[in-house]
Structures are given as structure tokens and as C-alpha cells.
Amino acid sequence: MKNEEQKKEINNNTLEKIETLFTYDLKVKNLINMLVPSEMDFYDDDLKFKYKEKLEDCLDKIKTYLNKIMLDFKIKEEIIKSFNLKISELLKFIESPYFLNLDYNGISSFIQGNITNMSEYFVYSVYRGFIGYMDDEYGENVKNPNTINEYLNYVHSYVTNNYEFYNNVPSVLELRCNISWMGIYLRGIDNNLGRDLFKKITESGLFREKTDRIDILNLKKRILIMARDLGHATVIDVDLTNENEILVSYFIPKNTNQELMAKLKGININSKEFGTGKFISNKDNLIDDLCEFMKMIPTDL
Image 1 (cartoon, rainbow, N blue to C red):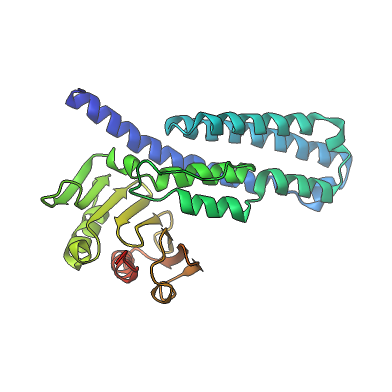
Image 2: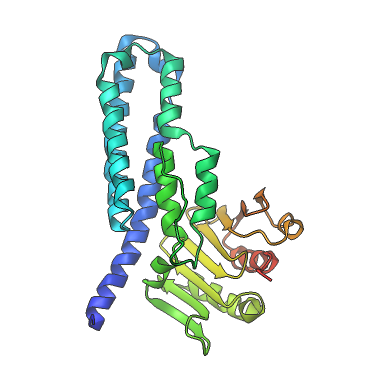
């Protein structure tokens, strides 16, 4: 049995790791974007060689960032091994004479096929496999990633939809029921925004009327919300980087009513199985926008 200090250290480490996840996630996305070639990169041999050096440097950094995240969150060993093998194979090919003989179209195809693309089958398997509040079945039947972008998506989805990582972060405020797993929990950083959101959700009637469990994970520049019974386990990702244009992204893993889903603000995918979307809010309206949005999500009933 761990003592309280050991438990606190583990929980604080989880919060730090989640913060690192989003920091490195953004770094990898920026590196991937940097690798998209332009025709100017192939204007002459010097520019082509510079692009090759940039490609090698970016892949080395991506390897460092993603390995850190995967080890932090104990991603399956076979995924970690296949990722490192992928990076090694790409670097080996880039060092080969064949790489420098490719033209702009050939390099573009290489980058798309190995780094930037994500197959629909892979994305669909992630949506169906990484669903909040699942235990034994969590992550089952998720297709193994192939491109670098797929590895990034795999890790991001694995963490943000995993209830255990939310639960490992200490609660700042909580409203519990008689049944231990039911309640509203504000976790992570203690600030006015988090407390105001907790209060608004508590007073909104969402809890008990539409959901029996809400976890709010308050980070430095982000808020993650997981709500049980709203489309099984809706996850809302609030990017607070720009307070005038706050990006709210959401994933609803179970679509119980396509007609109601179609009315959701910013809906992008409204399939028979799940829904995804995003919309823009701002500092003044964020809390009201989030509560109104959550009220409109179809429940499991």
C-alpha cells in the first residue's frame, strides 16, 4: 500500500506528463508540417541537400518527442518498437543514393506515404477503439499505425480518451454521490476558470439529468472534459492558447441520434457510430458555450 506522499508524487507526475503530451504533440505537428516539400526545395542540388538535412533533423526530433510520450504513458511495446523501426527505415532510405535521385513529385509521395497521411481505416479504428470509461476493451482492434502522423494520432487519442489518466490527477473540487464512481470532479490546476466551469456545470442540471460522471482536467493552456453517458463518453478538448479565439474540439464515440447530432455546433463527422467537430468560443462566453453544448449531446438513453 503506497503512503500518501507516494500517491501524491504519482498523481503530480501524471499531470506533468499530460502537460508534456500537449507540448510535444504540438512540436511534432509543427515538425511534420515543416517536412512538406515545396518545388523550391528542388531548384538545385544545394537546396535539395539542405532539404535532406532538414528531413533527417526533424525525424530525429520527432523520434525523441514521441518516444518520451509513449514511455510516459506505457504505450504497448509493439507500438514503440514499430515506431522506432519506422524511423530507422526512413533515415536509412534518406541516406541512400536513391533518395537524392527523386524529383519533387517523388519526394512528395514519399513524405505523404510515410509521414503526413492517415488512412481512413486507421482513423476509424481509433474512433471505435479509444473510448472513455472502458476497461478491458480499451484500445482493442485499433489498427497499428504506419505513418508518423498516425503514430502521433494513436498516442494522443490513447491518452485523451483514457479515464485512468484523468483519475490519477488529484481533484481540486468534487461533488460525489452515494455511488463512489458517480460525481463531478475538477482536477489539475486550481484557478478561477476551472472553479467557474465546475460551478456552472454543477448548477446546470447536466449532472444526474443527463450524465452521472464528469471529469474536468484543468491544464495550463487547455481543458479536457470527459462526460459519461453523453454519447457514451464524450471528450471535449478546449485549447486556451488564444483567449479571443478558443478552439473547442470534441469526440462523441457513440451516436445515438443522428438528427440531434446534426444540430451540434461545429459538427464535422456525423456517422452512424460516432461524431466529431469543433467550434470557436472566447474567454467571455466559453463556460456558457461549453454547458450549452454538453446539454445538446444525445445521451445513451
